[in-house]
Image (tube, rainbow, N blue to C red; front, side, top):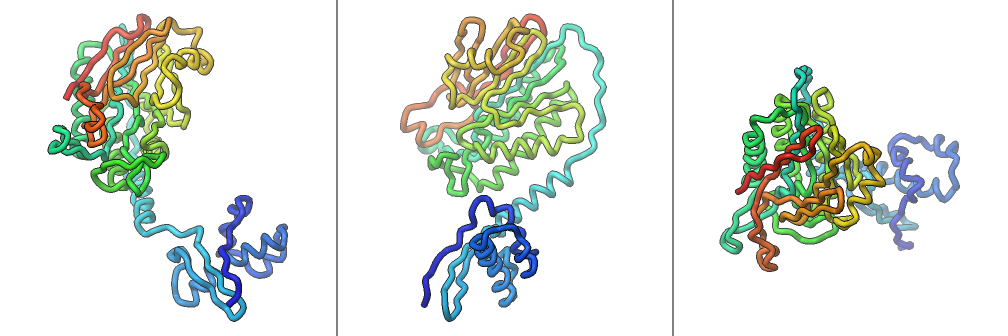
Length: 365
């Protein structure tokens, strides 16, 4: 038996993955590649050829052995996707394409004494599992969804009587509890979870869609996404999918970039948003001054931070930095460490166009 080895495709050749299926032998001769590179591509082509011999679709082959009289080759298929992942992708794409409606444009009348309403369901951790038997506090996917809906409805009810011109809805901020199939955060910290990651992704997407469809008839909406540490990748994909769903709606705008700090100008207000797991609170005002082009145009400046699950509000000269409460339950680790008993809430803030933040609303659980 000859040497056993695993072919690895160099990064600069990854774009040639499609060659596995499409190139003929004659095509290979005309490629402007080194002979070693052509040999690697040829080895990957063997996945297709040997799969066809036994009547398999090469995309369904995760790995295998190619054995001849002279050598034995173990390979991994770079194009392999589990049926679970393929079904999830197909369902997600179908969901977006089928449910993305042509929304009629809502024409708004001019408002006297206009305000912007910030609605900030922070650190929802959809998929977190907490047992009242251990912590005295139950938390499941169903409870998470219910609290977000109740919290948004509560903020809207409490803000009645004010003329709302704009709603700023803050998404992300650990909307999902885990980021990997192994039930860990992005960095690999194990979590107690309720439900499968793909089911929770779809639940979160439907939750955002339902909430936004409730808000848009009230006022034009600006959706701001804050990347976060529990779901750094899936949270980004989620908000991108939600933006795509509303791509035909002219009464909502999105800021779903991966930038860790976002800024929004509303009249004389400069409002910043960040998850809170990165830059220190005392550094956020100076970062705002450097990063926002509207710094000199606004008298009233605020930064809404998250991540801590409890209230801290402090003025750093002209900038108020404030952390948000969370509606999520107390899981085993937080209970054991004693990180609990802070009020659970969804928060909202009312900004007058000229006079800044004039009101705040808490929907407590």
